[in-house]
Image (cartoon, rainbow, N blue to C red):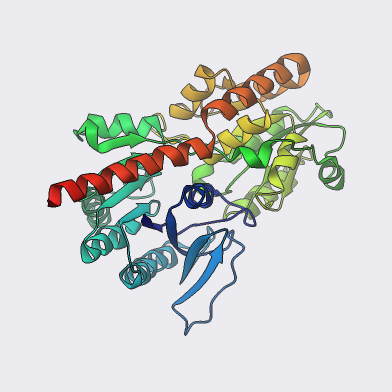
Length: 411
């Protein structure tokens, strides 16, 4: 069986962003599936840029046929450049779908929401079923974060959401919060399936703490609270600096912020201006190296900007923290905080409260036995519950059900 898998921000373990599509595809290939991944180019993917005159580049990665479309994305791009990138990728991806032979199913995973265009149209042109995956509830999330105002932009994104969902045989959700929200909006339960992001256990089994990395970055001998992820406006990392200011007298505690994004220069300038020497800003780390860095840390930070409601998202990094055995602190209300508390994998600090975030960090710095016990439990539970091999098996079963149902309906 052959699936065309559309993910604009596809990344392998050589990159510095989320690798779920890569891991799922590897496991599908191991189960006997043919997978063609249609992706863009991303500054965190590690993939080489293409010259302007080339539309695509095809390569084979671990049994996956990867078609890179010449649409370059970076978190540092402004809004017009991002929109152009999304539109360009949609067109090139649609053409790439049409070029594929022997396709049984088209699967598109957002964000951006624009992947629904090549997903739905490509499947229709190939005469095969289409499945759509939601990783962020656009445009609701954008509106609640203040990134889109009422008007023509919102109307366009609302239309595109309806377009992307309308013909999907199944809608996959990566968070229970998304599932619950679509049920509230009247979606039929039988169309919805929740498959969390999870993590690849193979990266974390037998991992050794990378103490050399810690020493090289001035973190040796410290209790390290680590954040590994994007440094954009939506991440709200000023809240971490607020907490760091309250921990300045704790020379034993350091906060490490690993990643990149358009807000990073401003955050660095603020930290320098306020003398926050307990904060280290570090470059992104390739996925294959990240587990060792996390294993040498002591506390995982889950930080997002506060919005007007609880957040439905469950980001990649919470599973990385759990798989490596880090207890987590979540500073925003919603699905992630509920998951962490229910699984006994960490605590939820009061949303937007820097004093409480600082208190939680200091508490675990001062209670190493409790911290280690929570981390061990998080690791054991996540290995059993959130491994991507099991998630890929569930996804394969869903795909087979969709293809078989389409075949039966056509008889």
